[in-house]
Image 1 (cartoon, rainbow, N blue to C red):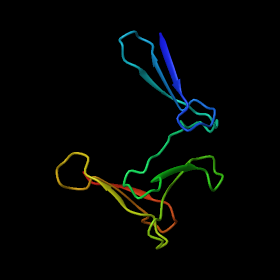
Image 2 (image 1 turned 60 degrees about the vertical axis):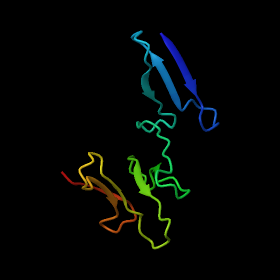
Image 3 (image 1 turned 90 degrees about the horizontal axis):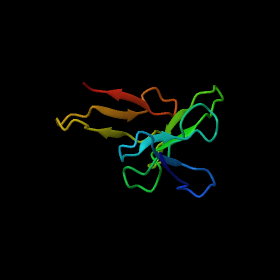
Image 4 (image 1 turned 120 degrees about the vertical axis):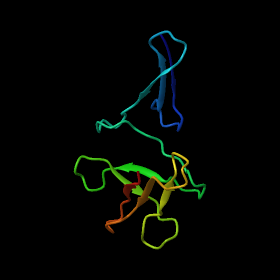
Length: 111
């Protein structure tokens, strides 16, 4: 078994740990839960290149569940829309918008 851990953000905690437990030469993926909330910690990136992380992990209302909040980079008071055509058919199949006006993005899927 071979293991390698990486602290990608310099906070002193291993963010990514790669282990090959079955000896096939490929690392098995293990996500860390450093804050003990029962959910794997995830580093979200700036997917649209606007200089802001597009998704943030937090529990702002204290209900014990991670809230997903999307950035409002336009300053209009609404979460920015992110759309994805994951199967390449020309139709958006995943779209993130704040449909109920609570300040948090809701997810819509198109089949």
